[in-house]
Length: 155
Image 1 (cartoon, one colour):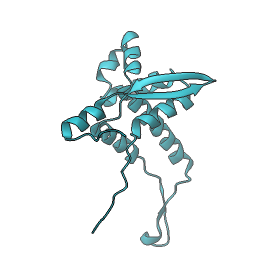
Image 2 (cartoon, helix red, strand yellow):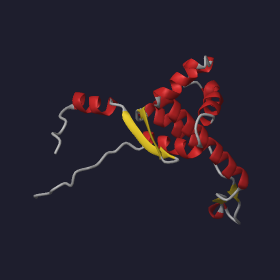
Image 3 (spheres, helix red, strand yellow):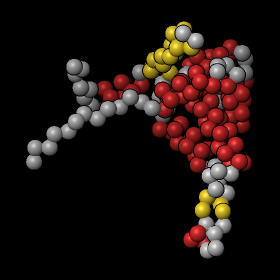
Image 4 (cartoon, helix red, strand yellow):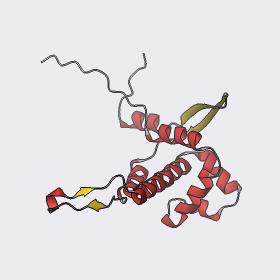
């Protein structure tokens, strides 16, 4: 069993360590280093998702109004923004993607957090790997492995 980390400095050091993403593609083992998103990065991405609102289906009264989550335009916008968010998260958290953009001399790579670079980041990331691989990488980045030990209450 591991010794518990004690104090903020030790925990911050553990959180800052790279995460090794492992998956198989067509039977071939694949590994890539990444890091988890910072709270600020996660918030920036969540705000983009929160901007997507489905249209409202009007009821007889305002209380009967409801969102139309089946609206085709809403579903298309939602999918597009989710892919944009995924690409940004991967670019920010995976040094290999950033290095590939810099090696290709993409000027936007240095300003990848700026809204004006968003579509360039998305086109770049989505052009490198298949959707399934991007999804595995993204899910590892956004879901740190945090477990809560079972608590014993002796009171």
